[in-house]
Image 1 (cartoon, one colour):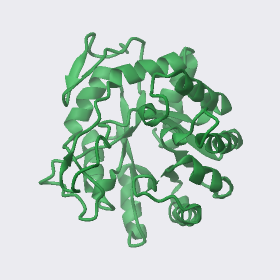
Image 2 (spheres, rainbow, N blue to C red):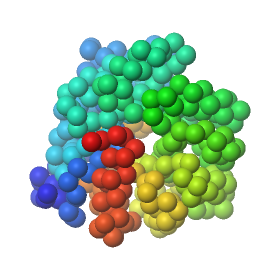
Image 3 (tube, rainbow, N blue to C red):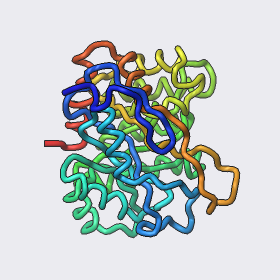
Image 4 (cartoon, rainbow, N blue to C red):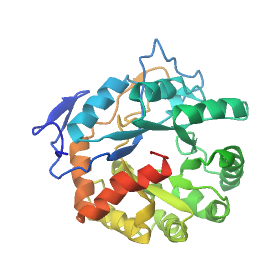
Length: 305
């Protein structure tokens, strides 16, 4: 398969994306994306934290054609709450090339979970960070509840939280009995500051096989995505357990600005996803290891056949 279907930069949603400069393996998977809108078909939850711009599935597919990506995981965005309609409809349109991570609550019945499984859902997300939740006791309870709900389906639990909560909840994660996927490097850091305890806990969870990590959204980390610190962090996580690494773009990169009222349209961050994929290849110069992270690991975790 060629590196991408474009040999020149590609513009999408006002952002120019570099051409990919390595051979992307067939069936490479972008393991962290979101779909937003159209808003008139998929209304946002009243109690959302922000209102995103629209980023429909057709735009995501155009980006993946440019990058040479063959599979995708759509993560239910927080502005929709537990109404997973936009995510499930995207799975139907992808016709087997997509998997999803849903958001549920105590009102979600087992029959609904079974229908989600049939559609291609393979996990649920606990988005503590976006909700501003930093209580380790609450995180432990949520992790245990989530594992009880989805364990019988063979699903995983995905968590987005900060390093302090991650470190405090590490023992709970280790004993859950289901796979736990940590978003966005766990927001950890190689620095000696607040991110370091979370990193040590995350490395231990990786080595034991209790956790997976998404090498996604490095622009959210201290030092910036192209810094030596982030490169060192990526390599340390990969070395700890290359079989439990995933890559994701975080397209369309929500979280640009949250200073206005909740119903004001929040812009996406201007992230070059071609550059992001090329950066990943620089972190992982070995071709076989790149294929493991982009193809084989996602195929196992997300139950691609």
